[in-house]
Image 1: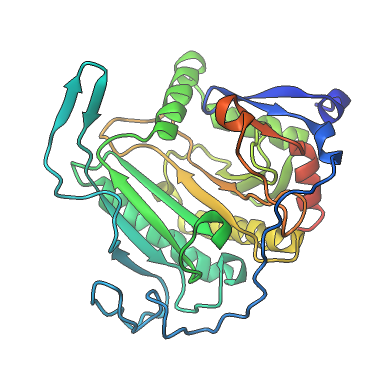
Image 2 (image 1 turned 180 degrees about the vertical axis):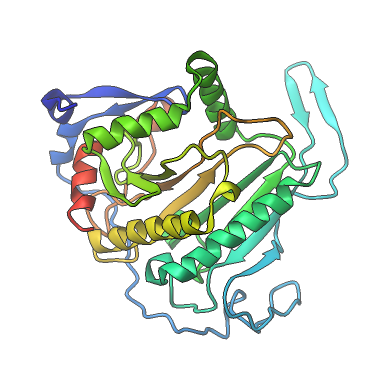
Length: 340
Protein backbone atom coordinates (compact mmCIF):
# COMPACT_ATOMS: atom_id res chain seq x y z
CA UNK A 1 0.00 0.00 0.00
CA UNK A 2 2.15 2.82 -1.24
CA UNK A 3 0.54 6.17 -0.68
CA UNK A 4 2.74 9.25 -1.05
CA UNK A 5 0.20 11.33 0.84
CA UNK A 6 1.11 9.35 3.97
CA UNK A 7 4.72 10.49 3.63
CA UNK A 8 4.02 14.17 2.92
CA UNK A 9 0.89 15.30 4.70
CA UNK A 10 -0.54 15.23 8.22
CA UNK A 11 -2.95 12.39 8.89
CA UNK A 12 -4.04 10.05 11.66
CA UNK A 13 -3.54 6.29 11.85
CA UNK A 14 -5.70 3.79 13.71
CA UNK A 15 -4.21 1.40 16.26
CA UNK A 16 -6.15 -1.83 15.76
CA UNK A 17 -4.92 -3.24 19.08
CA UNK A 18 -6.09 -0.39 21.31
CA UNK A 19 -8.82 1.27 19.27
CA UNK A 20 -7.04 4.63 19.50
CA UNK A 21 -5.58 7.02 16.92
CA UNK A 22 -2.12 8.53 16.48
CA UNK A 23 -1.50 11.83 14.68
CA UNK A 24 1.31 11.68 12.10
CA UNK A 25 2.96 14.92 10.93
CA UNK A 26 5.80 13.95 8.53
CA UNK A 27 6.45 17.55 7.44
CA UNK A 28 7.47 18.47 11.01
CA UNK A 29 10.62 16.35 10.81
CA UNK A 30 12.20 19.21 8.85
CA UNK A 31 11.82 21.74 11.67
CA UNK A 32 15.03 22.98 13.35
CA UNK A 33 15.81 21.60 16.81
CA UNK A 34 16.84 23.98 19.57
CA UNK A 35 15.48 21.95 22.48
CA UNK A 36 17.11 19.75 25.07
CA UNK A 37 19.92 17.40 24.13
CA UNK A 38 20.40 14.29 26.25
CA UNK A 39 23.79 13.32 27.60
CA UNK A 40 25.12 10.11 26.13
CA UNK A 41 27.25 7.98 28.40
CA UNK A 42 30.50 6.84 26.79
CA UNK A 43 31.68 5.15 29.96
CA UNK A 44 32.83 1.57 29.50
CA UNK A 45 31.22 -0.47 32.23
CA UNK A 46 33.19 -3.26 33.89
CA UNK A 47 32.00 -6.87 33.75
CA UNK A 48 31.67 -6.72 37.53
CA UNK A 49 30.85 -3.67 39.65
CA UNK A 50 31.28 -4.06 43.40
CA UNK A 51 28.78 -1.24 44.02
CA UNK A 52 26.02 -2.80 41.84
CA UNK A 53 23.27 -4.48 43.82
CA UNK A 54 22.46 -6.75 40.85
CA UNK A 55 25.93 -8.18 40.28
CA UNK A 56 26.65 -11.72 41.43
CA UNK A 57 27.77 -12.19 45.09
CA UNK A 58 26.94 -8.56 45.97
CA UNK A 59 24.67 -7.59 48.85
CA UNK A 60 21.34 -5.96 48.01
CA UNK A 61 19.88 -3.10 50.03
CA UNK A 62 17.65 -5.47 52.02
CA UNK A 63 20.72 -7.38 53.19
CA UNK A 64 20.28 -10.43 50.96
CA UNK A 65 23.35 -11.65 49.10
CA UNK A 66 23.06 -12.51 45.40
CA UNK A 67 24.25 -15.99 44.47
CA UNK A 68 27.26 -16.42 42.20
CA UNK A 69 24.91 -16.80 39.23
CA UNK A 70 26.29 -17.63 35.78
CA UNK A 71 23.26 -17.13 33.52
CA UNK A 72 19.88 -15.62 34.41
CA UNK A 73 19.00 -14.69 38.00
CA UNK A 74 15.48 -13.99 39.30
CA UNK A 75 14.44 -12.60 42.67
CA UNK A 76 11.43 -10.92 44.23
CA UNK A 77 11.71 -7.14 43.90
CA UNK A 78 13.02 -5.57 47.09
CA UNK A 79 10.94 -2.45 46.35
CA UNK A 80 7.86 -4.02 44.78
CA UNK A 81 5.14 -1.72 43.45
CA UNK A 82 2.55 -4.38 44.26
CA UNK A 83 2.18 -6.07 47.64
CA UNK A 84 1.26 -9.72 47.94
CA UNK A 85 -0.38 -9.43 51.33
CA UNK A 86 -2.37 -6.19 50.98
CA UNK A 87 -5.77 -6.37 52.71
CA UNK A 88 -8.87 -6.51 50.52
CA UNK A 89 -10.80 -3.25 50.54
CA UNK A 90 -12.68 -0.80 48.35
CA UNK A 91 -13.78 2.82 48.51
CA UNK A 92 -17.05 3.88 46.92
CA UNK A 93 -17.81 7.38 48.17
CA UNK A 94 -19.83 9.13 45.50
CA UNK A 95 -17.33 9.86 42.73
CA UNK A 96 -14.38 8.72 44.84
CA UNK A 97 -13.74 5.12 43.85
CA UNK A 98 -10.79 2.88 44.74
CA UNK A 99 -10.10 -0.84 45.07
CA UNK A 100 -7.28 -2.80 46.68
CA UNK A 101 -4.72 -4.36 44.34
CA UNK A 102 -2.34 -7.20 45.09
CA UNK A 103 0.48 -8.75 43.14
CA UNK A 104 4.00 -10.11 42.95
CA UNK A 105 6.92 -8.23 41.39
CA UNK A 106 10.19 -9.81 40.32
CA UNK A 107 13.52 -8.69 38.87
CA UNK A 108 15.28 -10.71 36.17
CA UNK A 109 19.01 -10.21 35.68
CA UNK A 110 19.69 -11.18 32.07
CA UNK A 111 23.40 -11.82 32.59
CA UNK A 112 26.03 -11.68 35.34
CA UNK A 113 28.09 -9.44 33.04
CA UNK A 114 27.47 -5.88 34.22
CA UNK A 115 28.81 -4.41 30.97
CA UNK A 116 26.30 -6.04 28.62
CA UNK A 117 22.82 -5.36 27.32
CA UNK A 118 20.61 -7.69 25.27
CA UNK A 119 22.26 -6.22 22.17
CA UNK A 120 25.65 -7.50 23.38
CA UNK A 121 24.50 -10.98 24.32
CA UNK A 122 24.69 -14.11 22.18
CA UNK A 123 21.40 -15.44 20.80
CA UNK A 124 21.78 -18.60 22.89
CA UNK A 125 22.08 -16.46 26.03
CA UNK A 126 19.03 -14.38 25.12
CA UNK A 127 17.22 -17.69 24.65
CA UNK A 128 17.98 -18.45 28.31
CA UNK A 129 16.18 -15.21 29.20
CA UNK A 130 13.20 -16.25 27.05
CA UNK A 131 13.11 -19.60 28.87
CA UNK A 132 12.97 -17.79 32.23
CA UNK A 133 10.18 -15.53 30.93
CA UNK A 134 8.25 -18.68 29.99
CA UNK A 135 8.85 -20.25 33.38
CA UNK A 136 7.85 -17.15 35.35
CA UNK A 137 4.74 -16.51 33.23
CA UNK A 138 3.59 -20.07 33.89
CA UNK A 139 4.53 -20.00 37.58
CA UNK A 140 2.96 -16.66 38.40
CA UNK A 141 -0.02 -17.23 36.14
CA UNK A 142 -0.85 -20.46 37.99
CA UNK A 143 -1.44 -18.41 41.15
CA UNK A 144 -5.22 -18.04 41.59
CA UNK A 145 -4.73 -14.45 42.74
CA UNK A 146 -2.78 -13.42 39.61
CA UNK A 147 -4.75 -12.53 36.48
CA UNK A 148 -2.07 -10.75 34.46
CA UNK A 149 1.68 -11.16 34.11
CA UNK A 150 3.51 -8.15 32.63
CA UNK A 151 7.10 -8.76 31.52
CA UNK A 152 9.05 -5.60 30.64
CA UNK A 153 12.44 -3.89 30.50
CA UNK A 154 13.47 -0.26 30.90
CA UNK A 155 16.86 0.29 29.30
CA UNK A 156 18.84 3.49 29.77
CA UNK A 157 18.76 6.36 32.25
CA UNK A 158 16.59 8.41 29.90
CA UNK A 159 13.90 5.73 30.36
CA UNK A 160 14.17 5.90 34.14
CA UNK A 161 16.37 2.85 34.57
CA UNK A 162 18.08 3.17 37.96
CA UNK A 163 20.73 0.50 37.38
CA UNK A 164 22.63 -0.17 34.11
CA UNK A 165 23.10 -3.87 34.89
CA UNK A 166 21.17 -5.83 32.19
CA UNK A 167 17.83 -6.63 33.76
CA UNK A 168 14.09 -6.54 33.33
CA UNK A 169 11.05 -6.88 35.55
CA UNK A 170 7.81 -8.77 35.96
CA UNK A 171 4.78 -7.19 37.58
CA UNK A 172 1.97 -9.69 38.11
CA UNK A 173 -1.32 -8.59 39.57
CA UNK A 174 -4.91 -9.43 40.40
CA UNK A 175 -6.53 -7.21 37.73
CA UNK A 176 -5.89 -6.36 34.09
CA UNK A 177 -3.92 -3.12 33.48
CA UNK A 178 -5.41 -0.48 31.19
CA UNK A 179 -3.38 -1.31 28.05
CA UNK A 180 -4.05 -5.03 28.40
CA UNK A 181 -7.78 -4.36 28.81
CA UNK A 182 -7.83 -2.34 25.57
CA UNK A 183 -6.00 -5.02 23.61
CA UNK A 184 -8.11 -7.76 25.13
CA UNK A 185 -11.31 -6.02 24.04
CA UNK A 186 -10.11 -5.22 20.52
CA UNK A 187 -8.81 -8.74 19.85
CA UNK A 188 -11.90 -10.37 21.32
CA UNK A 189 -14.23 -8.21 19.21
CA UNK A 190 -12.32 -8.97 15.99
CA UNK A 191 -12.14 -12.70 16.74
CA UNK A 192 -15.88 -12.92 17.44
CA UNK A 193 -16.65 -11.15 14.14
CA UNK A 194 -14.05 -12.86 11.91
CA UNK A 195 -13.11 -16.10 13.71
CA UNK A 196 -9.45 -15.25 13.17
CA UNK A 197 -6.63 -13.47 14.96
CA UNK A 198 -6.59 -9.68 14.65
CA UNK A 199 -2.81 -9.51 14.89
CA UNK A 200 -2.38 -12.62 12.75
CA UNK A 201 -4.37 -11.09 9.90
CA UNK A 202 -2.47 -7.82 10.32
CA UNK A 203 0.89 -9.61 10.12
CA UNK A 204 -0.15 -11.29 6.86
CA UNK A 205 -0.89 -7.88 5.37
CA UNK A 206 2.45 -6.50 6.59
CA UNK A 207 4.41 -9.48 5.26
CA UNK A 208 2.84 -8.97 1.85
CA UNK A 209 3.49 -5.21 1.82
CA UNK A 210 7.07 -5.43 3.19
CA UNK A 211 7.06 -1.64 3.75
CA UNK A 212 7.42 -1.77 7.53
CA UNK A 213 9.09 -5.16 8.02
CA UNK A 214 12.63 -4.90 9.41
CA UNK A 215 13.50 -8.58 9.79
CA UNK A 216 11.89 -11.99 9.71
CA UNK A 217 12.92 -15.58 10.27
CA UNK A 218 10.85 -18.74 9.95
CA UNK A 219 8.85 -18.07 13.10
CA UNK A 220 8.93 -14.35 13.93
CA UNK A 221 8.59 -10.97 12.27
CA UNK A 222 10.08 -7.66 13.45
CA UNK A 223 8.33 -4.56 12.13
CA UNK A 224 7.39 -0.96 12.73
CA UNK A 225 3.64 -1.02 13.40
CA UNK A 226 1.57 1.07 10.97
CA UNK A 227 0.23 3.01 13.99
CA UNK A 228 3.57 3.38 15.83
CA UNK A 229 3.80 6.32 18.24
CA UNK A 230 7.46 6.44 19.25
CA UNK A 231 9.94 7.41 16.47
CA UNK A 232 11.49 3.94 16.10
CA UNK A 233 8.84 1.90 17.88
CA UNK A 234 8.94 -1.75 16.86
CA UNK A 235 7.02 -4.96 17.40
CA UNK A 236 8.15 -8.58 17.48
CA UNK A 237 5.38 -11.13 16.93
CA UNK A 238 5.17 -14.85 16.14
CA UNK A 239 3.87 -15.74 12.69
CA UNK A 240 1.75 -18.49 14.23
CA UNK A 241 -1.14 -17.47 16.47
CA UNK A 242 0.18 -18.10 19.97
CA UNK A 243 -1.63 -16.53 22.88
CA UNK A 244 1.41 -16.64 25.18
CA UNK A 245 5.12 -17.39 25.20
CA UNK A 246 4.81 -20.79 26.84
CA UNK A 247 3.36 -22.16 23.60
CA UNK A 248 6.72 -21.69 21.85
CA UNK A 249 8.72 -24.79 20.97
CA UNK A 250 12.45 -25.01 21.62
CA UNK A 251 13.19 -23.94 18.04
CA UNK A 252 10.67 -21.11 18.16
CA UNK A 253 12.10 -19.85 21.44
CA UNK A 254 15.51 -19.61 19.78
CA UNK A 255 13.96 -17.82 16.79
CA UNK A 256 12.36 -15.35 19.21
CA UNK A 257 15.76 -14.76 20.81
CA UNK A 258 17.25 -14.13 17.35
CA UNK A 259 14.56 -11.55 16.59
CA UNK A 260 15.30 -9.74 19.87
CA UNK A 261 19.03 -9.84 19.11
CA UNK A 262 18.63 -8.43 15.60
CA UNK A 263 16.36 -5.59 16.72
CA UNK A 264 18.45 -4.50 19.71
CA UNK A 265 21.70 -4.65 17.72
CA UNK A 266 20.06 -2.62 14.94
CA UNK A 267 18.89 -0.05 17.46
CA UNK A 268 22.46 0.36 18.78
CA UNK A 269 23.76 0.79 15.23
CA UNK A 270 21.21 3.49 14.33
CA UNK A 271 22.78 6.30 16.34
CA UNK A 272 25.93 4.41 17.39
CA UNK A 273 24.99 4.33 21.06
CA UNK A 274 23.49 1.98 23.60
CA UNK A 275 19.91 2.61 22.47
CA UNK A 276 17.43 3.29 25.30
CA UNK A 277 13.91 1.89 25.21
CA UNK A 278 11.08 0.40 27.20
CA UNK A 279 9.96 -3.00 25.99
CA UNK A 280 7.14 -5.24 27.11
CA UNK A 281 5.40 -8.49 26.22
CA UNK A 282 1.63 -8.37 25.90
CA UNK A 283 0.11 -11.83 26.09
CA UNK A 284 -3.06 -13.54 27.26
CA UNK A 285 -4.24 -12.76 30.78
CA UNK A 286 -3.89 -15.61 33.29
CA UNK A 287 -7.49 -15.25 34.49
CA UNK A 288 -8.56 -18.82 33.80
CA UNK A 289 -10.48 -17.93 30.64
CA UNK A 290 -9.79 -19.46 27.21
CA UNK A 291 -8.34 -16.23 25.74
CA UNK A 292 -8.04 -17.84 22.31
CA UNK A 293 -8.46 -14.43 20.72
CA UNK A 294 -5.03 -13.35 21.98
CA UNK A 295 -1.89 -13.18 19.81
CA UNK A 296 1.14 -12.37 21.93
CA UNK A 297 3.61 -9.68 20.85
CA UNK A 298 6.54 -7.71 22.22
CA UNK A 299 6.67 -3.93 21.79
CA UNK A 300 9.71 -1.67 21.96
CA UNK A 301 9.24 2.04 22.68
CA UNK A 302 12.54 3.93 22.18
CA UNK A 303 12.51 7.70 22.76
CA UNK A 304 15.37 8.82 20.48
CA UNK A 305 14.21 10.88 17.52
CA UNK A 306 16.99 12.45 15.42
CA UNK A 307 20.23 11.40 17.06
CA UNK A 308 21.70 9.87 20.19
CA UNK A 309 21.03 13.14 22.03
CA UNK A 310 17.61 14.25 20.73
CA UNK A 311 14.59 12.46 22.17
CA UNK A 312 10.86 12.60 21.58
CA UNK A 313 8.92 14.24 24.41
CA UNK A 314 5.33 13.18 25.09
CA UNK A 315 4.06 16.59 26.19
CA UNK A 316 1.56 19.27 25.22
CA UNK A 317 -0.73 17.88 22.53
CA UNK A 318 0.28 14.31 23.38
CA UNK A 319 -0.81 14.83 26.98
CA UNK A 320 -4.02 16.70 26.27
CA UNK A 321 -4.98 15.47 22.80
CA UNK A 322 -3.59 12.27 21.32
CA UNK A 323 -0.24 10.69 20.53
CA UNK A 324 1.73 12.37 17.70
CA UNK A 325 4.84 11.51 15.68
CA UNK A 326 6.98 13.32 13.10
CA UNK A 327 8.67 10.45 11.24
CA UNK A 328 6.42 7.97 9.44
CA UNK A 329 6.49 4.27 10.22
CA UNK A 330 7.72 3.57 6.70
CA UNK A 331 10.64 5.98 7.01
CA UNK A 332 11.62 4.52 10.38
CA UNK A 333 11.41 0.97 9.04
CA UNK A 334 13.62 1.78 6.06
CA UNK A 335 16.30 3.32 8.26
CA UNK A 336 16.40 0.28 10.53
CA UNK A 337 16.13 -2.21 7.66
CA UNK A 338 19.19 -0.68 6.03
CA UNK A 339 21.21 -1.52 9.15
CA UNK A 340 20.19 -5.17 9.55
